Length: 331
View 1 (cartoon, rainbow, N blue to C red):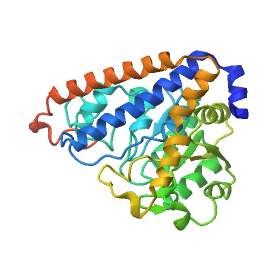
View 2 (view 1 turned 45 degrees about the vertical axis):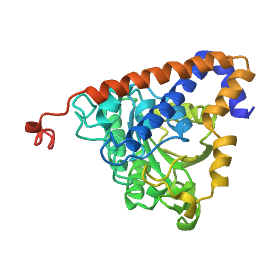
View 3 (view 1 turned 60 degrees about the vertical axis):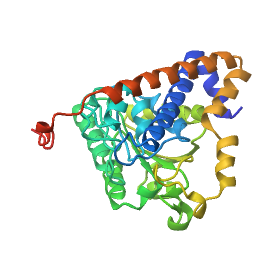
């Protein structure tokens, strides 16, 4: 057991661990169903699977309250679910139905739910960095202790906007955590081939404390997130975290021929030896926190919930065509 897990074990209870396991399984199950909807030509447009990276979204969001804010990315289903999104409205949005989070008009890459502090996914690479930093500025100006987490991929570290907002956040000590999900690839190119230096070094250049953590270990991620969120609430932000993780699918659901940029052996290694859900399940059973039968029951319950939500969404109605010009501009 890692030192992070040992420390976490003394300060948490079984419900915390089981909730994190459940949340990770919910994300994986959602993505499995979303992928199947695409392959069966029932879902319009493309989507970007989050499978493999579940420990990042869950580990961080478990340290947040409902009023804390997040901004997400084009690979954002995991963040949405971890922050409290439900299956029914998520699937309705993916299928373009009126009961979706954005009334079926946003689709996979634009889901938002301000009631849960989710300020929205963004199809533009790095597009939510300014939004997250603005939300943190708002919290500070209003005297709120809300914290904002900005999720983005390693490829987004090439965007100039990141350096503009980190400069502002560092100068004004804003309560924001920049969470870089480094899955090793920027679309179809290895990150190591296009990113000079280190990713954490980019934040350190602005005097921002930066950390690197195993993004496949949900307890280690949560342990760090709890500490940084608490420090943000005390006015000690901003912070930067590089989370080492891996996406099991291609860049998007249509990226099925991945052999030309990564190997089958590499994929197998991450899926068999570094899978975040399996790692937590093995630890839960070895520590006597849950039995294999109990965890199987959790998975079965979530599969049933997802199946019912998909069936509901497939039969839900589309938005009325007369609404095509509604919700386009802010009032």
